[in-house]
Length: 597
Image: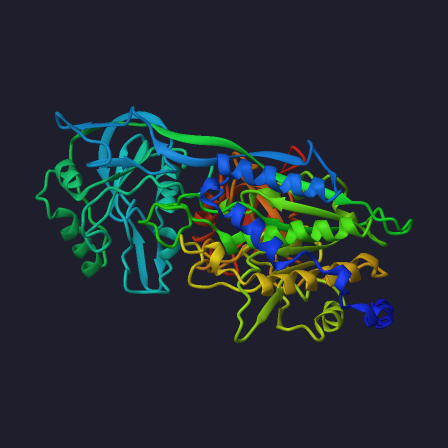
């Protein structure tokens, strides 16, 4: 390794003299960048939500620009198609009847977006918070002494320790986790009701899409407190009284009520098609042309916003133009393709330009690309991702580059390319992050993630073209040209180095007390009946047990895992030091792995 490092540094020093672009090498102009952004972020494209007409129009525009630049279109005339679930809505068959009364969809009840579609008539049982576990000295089991098999389970949303931010009940108290607990015990379905501490208005939960294609395996229904009180035969304040008595008494409530509940849940999942846009300039170095650099940026955004879209203004329905996120990255991608087209190719490695679809829905496009690449992924020597590169500040201009720890001598390379730029380059070594480069990092590919940073307009209708710093973006784009030029001829090729966990960070794992050390497929787009392992952290529990990238986890300690929510529910009940058996499907065969946590 020390030998390779010395060779790299020598090579970089030899190349360091010509990092600046000449006047003839300008990567587009600020006017051209602005023009691309204005089209992609126009009202005509209506926010470019994956699977919509605006999404298709954006893809066609990008493909035409690649073709005009002289790049060779790959896959199906430049399109790599993939399918996804773009929306979930309530169907017309939803109904609820009990005690001789019928109730109104949305007003009185509403299936959750992850509810199975089913028709169930069964008796009702009340099961407190629908939780079983231990938090510190508090042992809690809402299912002790009651038989929920083939019955409707009613449970309160929330948990017994609402004021404890580090409660062990937190990962057990999600709506998905409660559905899993009820399903495990043979329940026919789950009715969840919000106490006023969670929802003062006593409304049903909106069926907004939670970006998962998988359901809970049983019908899961949100009901109002008024409906819950009717089903229990109690006054309207019963739900809040039950919550208070359980929390103050530190004991689950037991309640019997002889009533039959008949519910039809009708949940419609809208499946659509989106695409990656892919084009290439072949290298012309005989020794390097069969190696690849992938340059990427996602082109989708949030459409018209609304609940479940990712908008930070969920109550506003308006075009979320996404000028910076990420029309800016795509504009730079197009201009990079034009620049390399004007040079008649490049001297070293082949360069592949990819505009990724459905990034906002869970990196679906980039995940699809790495799962079905046009060449062996081992031939990809580096990936550069641009996401939000259009808001370079004028007072304190800073470009952030993440992934600098993912390959040897990345810092030496950046020292050369960044010297003399009209902006500061801040670095982060971690290769994982909330954008498309994460899919490549999970495959053991060196990555660099380039951004000018977030801002107050992020994921709102105010991320507009007139707020782009086009001159600053041109400077960033020229920086990327120089970076690509160095990487295209760097010999030997970059050597991957793990930097930071290759496990998905954020919401799904923040409350877990144990971890396998994997990157789960949070989208569920490619897997049904299990959870796909997207990456395995070196020397983590999963790695030590022999788990491999691509394994599909279907059970933990004999308990079924159908998706990432099941996985998090199972993991939330485990403790450090435990030994667990995990069943996976690998190459169509079942394997049992023994994992020490």
